[in-house]
Length: 267
Image (cartoon, rainbow, N blue to C red; front, side):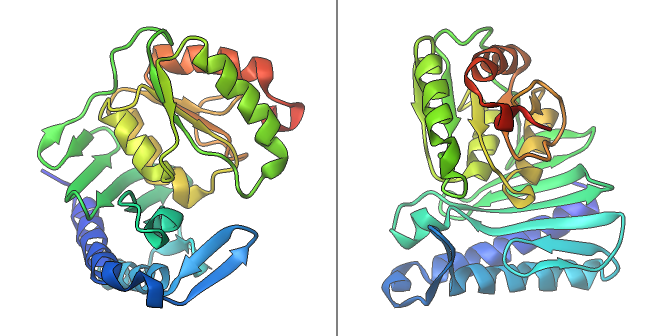
């Protein structure tokens, strides 16, 4: 049975998903702002985030919040980390691959996580120590024991274009053994797909807390692990993330570490 925090987060994610779907046929009329170079936000992101915060505040008014669009508010060891629309670029172009991501962290450690794909009505949930679930089905990471034949997901860093050459080198080296590499445009869904064994592994540079907080808990509770490019376990302060089952993470870390710059290996 889901924990109360997961039930509340799932309700908030579904409410945000309804807003996201409601505006899908009006994308051309949306007001879109470029926050930073190639980093866009629409009024849908803001409306969805507002709805999530409203639902969470109603149940947990004392908790802190870290949201992609509105930033940090409140001080509490328990912090909700919110990405109201992960995959905004896909959404604005009509590409049907995006999600809502919500996690509750306690002193920086993910305790509960929800990722909701409103188009497919897929609700990925996890609580620390309780396992990971997709709708009513228990999740387990891939059983693949090496990079040979693996399907790996990644994203290219529009925030950190200075790392593109290093990432292309990593990608080239991984493709010498992997079956293929996917770039879907939603870090949260990539991690949820790792938890569901749709992908064997995942790596990306420069992620933000709201990109990965719910997803890494899903991977961990599905029997996998995550860490940074140097092989340190846990949420990387750098945002440079590797995730998957234990065998895949070990293999990816060896390849990526061999091609990463010193800056990418920093904690």
